[in-house]
Amino acid sequence: MRYIVLCIPLIIASVALALVTGAEARTLPDQSPASSGLSRRGNTVSVPGANNFVVGSIIGQAPTTRTYDFVVTEMEGAPDGFTKPMLVVNGLFPGPTIEANQGDRLVVKVTNQMSNTTAIHWHGIPQNGTNYYDGTAAITECGIPPGQSLTYDFSLDTFSGTTWWHAHYDTEYTDGIEGALIVHPRSYPPNFPTWDEDLVVVLTDVYHTFSGIIAAELAAGNGSLSPILLQVPDSGAINGIGQYNGSTNYFDFDLKPNKTYRLRLINEGSEDPIRFSVDYHSLTVIEADSTLIEPQVVSGVAIEVAQRYSVLITTNQTAEPQGNYWMRAELASVATLPGANADIRGIIRYGGNKSLPTASTDPGVPGSGLSDLNVATLVPAIAKTPLDSTKSYVVDFTLTQSTDGGAIAFMNGTSWQPLTNTSTLLQIVQDGQKGQSFAPEGPSLQLGNQFMITEDTIQTVDILLVNQGPGGHPFHLHGHAPFILGSNTGTFDGTGINTVNPIYRDTFLVPNGGWTLIRFVTDNPGIWAFHCHIAWHMAVGLLMQINSLPSVSAKFDIPQTILDQCRV
Ligand SMILES: [Cu+2]
Image 1: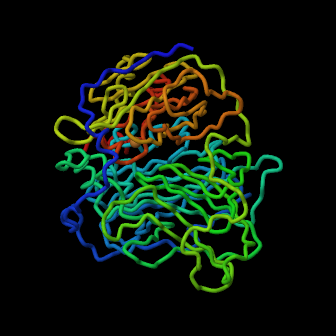
Image 2: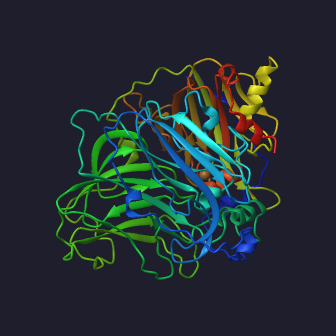
Image 3: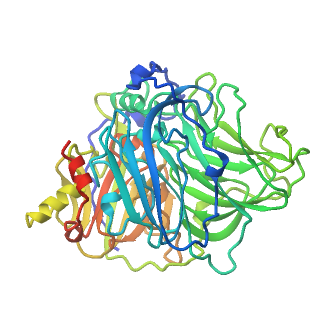
């Protein structure tokens, strides 16, 4: 297998590498709403009602169009008890759960009542033929200006599984524009496990500082601190409720004893991997991102940013005398500030009372001998056989410190900056109308730091992502669920590759100092963001684009509203 090495040597001081092991600390900037550009509006963010986190009642309905009205506003909210400026849909955090069946059509009218532009991305949805509704600012649209609306209108087609929607404009999703997106398949594989009820568990890290301020600090640097460490969260939340500085407000599920529940765990956070477990209960993992897997029984799952897992639990334990058990969402790191809290909890109740669980420290699953999920062992329940690759690329990336002290990220030596008043897709279409092609085949750097790989024929592409550090990075490829053929620390030497029923998923870790090899087919026309999903890393340029079949996308009939919103 021959790889085209794309690396351009970096002449950037890697001071950050030496600093990442230092203590995580920062001073809080001004917390007043004025400093975030927000005005006090009197309204405060609400936690959605319990039914927002229960799904399954629509299974079996005939294919239909499901419509939603999203109004995005600026509000103050306090997911962990600390009041902070937020950006939310319909006044809720997390936002409304979208639930549909495979083959349904989704029509979501998004009205922007904020003072900044926004765009909503439907994470993991293939958008085959509707790339212009992928909702990725500066790539597939210019964004919805303040006071305007855009109606996203697309078929879910063959897609099914657990995923989420979120703002894809700057770091807006960190401030609250996010929610679950659940699509039920027409059927499950033979002998697949079953469950009695189907629940949504949205996990997030929580930042008390408005995300735009954190992103600006990160880009500018801050004295002697490594800018890479400025963005650690203050706390976290389970379904919109977390704990900070000793607060004792918990999200709880009121369940029935001796039933099996599917918990759809979604990490909608911005940086931290989150380990999820339920005291005394084993978890049977049945889905990774939107891919059903051969069931595995584990004690806990570590979920990278933007990843999802479905787990089954059975409410048949007796260790807690009152029948109330902690759900634990352990953040990988929080700020070293008074009150900051990585030990986020919710409650699973099936004892018919409202007392608190008694286990203070995590008891695990005593006597079970279980360990946490190892992602290298995931096997899809529906096998797909990868074709042999026809193109292979190596893309390295690094997060480092620029000479002016700010953080900056590079993919293949380029640092993405969003285009303004245009989008990559719009340029592809405009060039197509002039009889020109926007970008040459293979890797190219387009004007405005737009690094992309272009394939104008259907190819089976391997990309070897090489992580030059620091830290692990969860990458997401829009519009695809690539095969993960291998992933490890150290230097890739051609071994450690699995092409027999490999896992396919839309978000995957590239380990610190290591590599991940993915394979996908360029049969979905459009321009697809391929980026680290840590909000802060994307904000400093850790993004490239896959330009599939541009001759086809050049003929897209981009909706007039999207064109108009590029001219503002
Ligand atoms: Cu990253």
